[in-house]
Length: 344
Image (cartoon, rainbow, N blue to C red):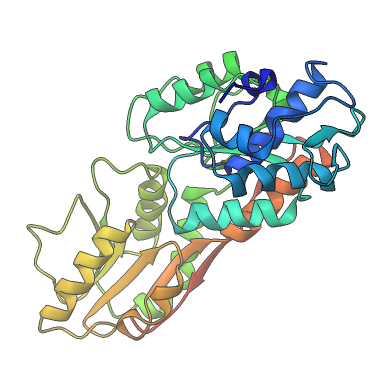
């Protein structure tokens, strides 16, 4: 099949988490904005688009219908789509870089999308806590985005992240989400947790339930991407309220101890902790305590309910959307909650 000449203007990235139909629509709008596609110009047929871009017919048709709904494209029965209008009000065009796609990041993403107009474009990439991959994604995605939303959690190598971001992203287009970045120049938006203060305040709310325990153990893996400020805030709490504190990197060599309240910050360590607690001779919520970082629906039922300390991830997505819609440079702290359940 001979390739339609406009196919080369359409870019589909199979590694992007952004739906392919939106990538298709975004490519066409970008070409229109550069006058590479003009009014009344006939676009590739569904079959040509499917073949030339290696996408399904359904995806190709969905992308065209999306632009038709915007008033950009039109079609004649039995014929291909054509460009109806090159005049439109550009919507925010967002590059979202998330450290990983877990339940909490999905809540942020879903909340962000739900809070924005359906015509807003979001190119969504996951860099798996890898600083070098993060840099590569940002350097390779040099489109003229209106906003760059960054969720910055790295296992290692990110000491100079602020310098890289300062050189690659205009501060007025930057929104930092979840974890603050020190050293960013200029005015930018942020929707973050205050990790040190948040865990201190959450543990204070749990003081009555913690009274039956003498020691607190936090399971904090050496390769964890979680901020060290969590340890600092917990240390301050234990010092002020006379709890013995121990940070351990894992549970493989640990035996469950009576009189200890355990805090797990990762889901994998929580599974190990629950298994060991069930196998021990001690009663969870009386002899040993279990606290988990970040709320998920399953924690309402495991062990008759696991106590959690968690930020409001849905609000995080909503506030990020507000910064985008209002084009403001506020720094917003998202509240942190203790949900007390039977495990403590």
